[in-house]
Length: 270
Image (cartoon, rainbow, N blue to C red; front, side, top):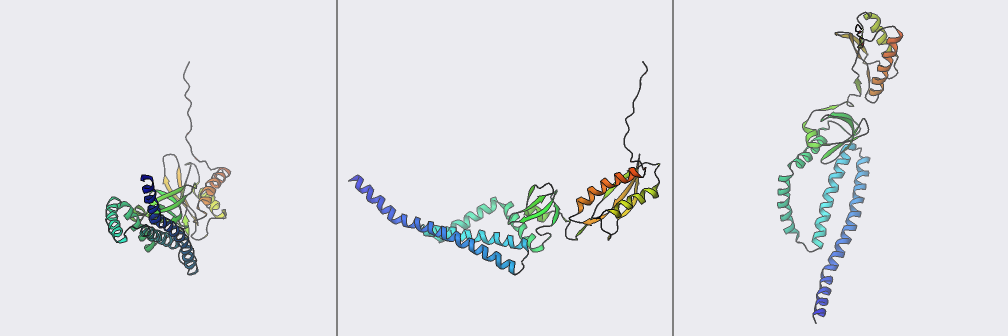
C-alpha cells in the first residue's frame, strides 16, 4: 500500500509539475530563438538607418539583457511562481544588489554618458586610465580596447567617463615629438638642414601642417633639436620609427656627431 501511495503521489507530482517544466523548457527555447531574431532584425534596422556602430552595439547589448529578463520572468510564471510576488522580491533584491554593486551602477551610468556625449567611437585611437589603444567595443559596463601590442584592454565605463580621455583620431592628424642631440662642435644650420631633409623626404610625413626643426636645449653634452613632423593617426608609429632610423643614418653621412658616454680607461702604474 505504501508503494502504491508513493507511486500515486509521484504520478500526481509529474502530472502537475512535469507539464509546467516542459512548458518552461519550450518557452526558453522559443524565447531564446525570438530574442536572437529580434537582435538580428534590430541590427539590420540600425545599419540601414546609419546608426553609429558604437551606439548600435550598446543598444543591442542593453535590449538583449532586457529581453532575457522578460524571458526569465515568463519562465518563472510558467513554473507557477507568482509574478507579482516575484516583482516585489525582485525589487527588494534589486535594491540590495544595487547597494552592494554601486560600482557596477556607476559603470552603467558611465556607459550611458559615453553614448550621449560620444568622446570616442569604435575604431578611435584613445589614451585613458593610463592605457593606449584602439576602441574595439563599448559595452554596458565596460569598454574594450586593442592595445598597440595586440593586448585586449578592458576599462570600466565609470572610471573612463570620469577621467581624462585623449582621442588621437578625432582631428585625423598627430604630431610626432622627437628630440635628437648633436655635439657642440656641430654646425647648427647644417644640422637643421640635414634633419629637415630627412623629414621632407619621408613619404608619410605630411606637408601640412609643415614639419619643424628647432634648437630646444643646450644640454650638458649636446645641442638638442626638437624635431616635429606631422602624420595621420594611422601612420604615427611608421613615422616615429622611420624618422628615428633615418636621422641616425643622415647625421652619420654628414659627419655630424651624436654624443654618447665614452668609457675612460685608467692605467695604474705598476
